[in-house]
Amino acid sequence: MDKPKPEDFPPLLRLRLDSDALIANWRTLNDMSGRASAGAAVKADGYGLGAREVVKRLAAAGCRAFFVAHWREAAAIADLIPPEQISVLNGVLPEEVGPAIALGAKPVINSMEQLATWRDAGGGRCDIMFETGMNRLGIEDERAGEVAALSLDIDMVMSHLASADEDVPQNAAQLERYRAVATYFPNARKSLANSAGIALGPDYHFDVTRPGLSIYGGIQRPEYEGRIRQVAFPEARILQIRHLKPGDKVGYNATFTADREMTVAVAAIGYADGYMRAFSNGGKFFIGNDSAEVVGRVSMDLVILKLAFRQIGHQWARVAQSLAMAARSTNLSQYELLTNSGRRSERSWCV
Image 1: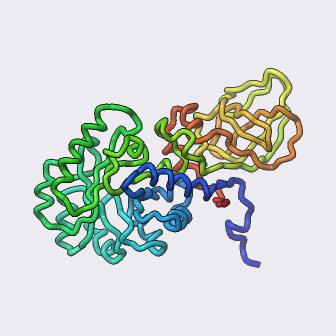
Image 2: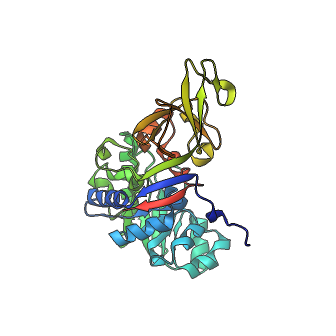
Image 3: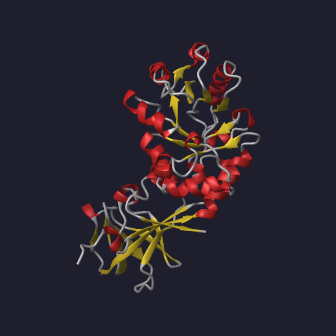
């Protein structure tokens, strides 16, 4: 008898994913982009939801520009779409040039050194990132004229907004610097706005927007309340029911003590699954239609849920908070909550 494979065992974690919500969110962002077309950031394995399944759905909906961080991420989706629709945001290292050219995706050139490496290797079409105030990746904006004089085959000229989720002067300052850069590249497509940047209005849209988090249900600005739908719904198998007496202590370091008789459920989810310790003594779940509160510390693989009833008719507990609500209650970012959510989960897409 062959040894069982991992997939022969039933899952203890499920990530239920709403295909309709994913597509509706992208269409909302595309509509809000006005004359620009919305692409999609699918880095970090589609923000934890599975890049291949995300790309299939968004490409069918009409998305024609996809953004990843690494070349391995580009290679993982290059059989699903024309590779020239993929931009690799971290650029290209010398040891990546050969396979990058063979793959056919575009590097987003971030430095003069990368530019020389790509040009000297005969790399061809590329995107260019300019630094306009974030001081992360990007060629210094004052070198735009120097780059333009090299007559490269440039598809998109980009920069990245640092604080688009806030109404701060930095947004307008970056826009002004980016506009100055853009004048040197009249024939290239222009791209500045991320998810939050789309909501700043038409001045920030240019030709291509690059939404990421909001495609997957993240709400960074008030303009998205009621318009962006939740996509990911984590669920965990209930492993055990316990009946506590007054004075019984719960979890690591006994941060919760029962003040009366109560029933708790132990569920198979923890900080290794993106359900962070910040949810200790306060996170919310549903078991069927009944709510259950996290008591004690969240551990690596388990949470303990206080029940309002002694018997349960359901084997699964689902996380109750939306992404934005969870971020507000824990002071964690929506990005880290989402991208860490699916490591051990069985992903299940529903229409």
